[in-house]
Image (tube, rainbow, N blue to C red; front, side, top):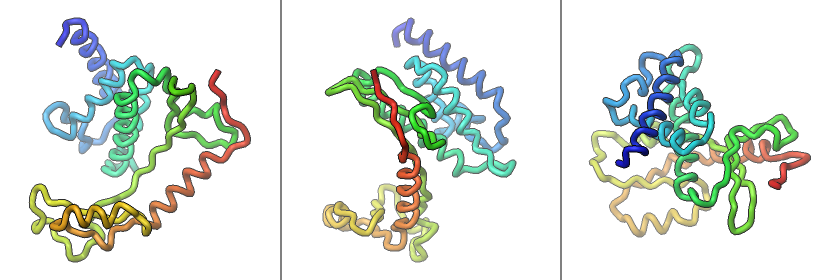
Length: 212
């Protein structure tokens, strides 16, 4: 690694670790084991976002991963925060040359007292702002599939789940992976619909912000 890049990386790493120390995390939190466990290494995404000069966005995303609910550690809350971070990271990586700025929780865009996760300003093919909202659903197949036992699933097994009733790719996947386990009870159709309705409610507004 280039010495200048390494030096900058270490500065960003120190910044994130210092910020982590200021947070009152529950003792079960994965970040407290950094860098000794695979799950704790998700912290690297915050360091890389900071390395990308995304102002205070990594800090704000980090605080959303505190995973505290009713005074206790909640792995679901942790995953919600991580999902928001990972999606932004991969959007930036794929579009690194085409995004001019990121606006976190752009409350000034909408006039309905609703905020989105973040907005990305794209330069090409025409300058525009893409508003992004992240929703997390529980998708643990062992929670709903009564006949599915974790001891019966081998490493590398493929599990296929229909997310919505008219999922056009579902039958194709079943044909391509005939040895796959079909999760018939895990459609999560109702949860999917609820999240779509929440998203639409967030996007309903009297006026939108135009990129100059």
